[in-house]
Amino acid sequence: MLNKYARAFFTRVLTPFAAFLLRRGVSPDAVTLLGTAGVMAGALVFFPRGEFFWGTIVITSFVFSDLVDGNMARQAGISSRWGAFLDSTLDRVADGAIFGGFALWYAGGGDDNVLCAVAIFCLASGQVVSYTKARGESIGLPVAVNGLIERAERLVISLVAAGFAGLHKFGVPGIQVLLPIALWIVAVGSLITLVQRVVTVRREAAEADAAAATSEAAS
Image: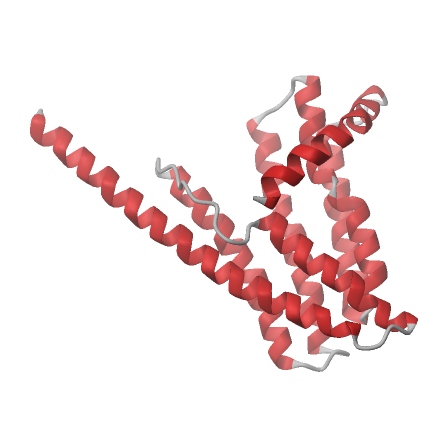
């Protein structure tokens, strides 16, 4: 739900900026690559050192590239399968860097093996949640369910919590607890979403197989 409404809002807001980049000769693929590089830098340079506030600032400044590149492609009339593939693939890379950065912190300076494992689970489950939909659609199923927590929710929950948790270094007491809470929410929500999608694919596959068998019998 958040993905649907937030994407529509920011698409309208970012349309003039996308048009500006096109006039300057910037390609959508270049924006995709630059945005992913920025997110990875913010996550893997700042997060493992516990610099959550500045890491979140850097990531947020680049994460909107995911909307800008598609907007540019539509305005220029050059939307392509390659562009969609590149965008989707690099989204997974960026997500992995974010939760990998959290895991590195808790494996090191954060000194919490449980939260390190939770962060790794968030990383892995996010990838699998995306894969279930892509794989279901690749075998001809609609996968008519989004689930409790999609990519937008995972990013908003984790990055907002990380940004506020980073204020601990500016003297705000107790606020660092927000990040562990957020990671647990994302982990549980991702698990529920994964189950929702698997159940949906199983149902749709059974219905498709039954319809195919009925069609063959009738012929």
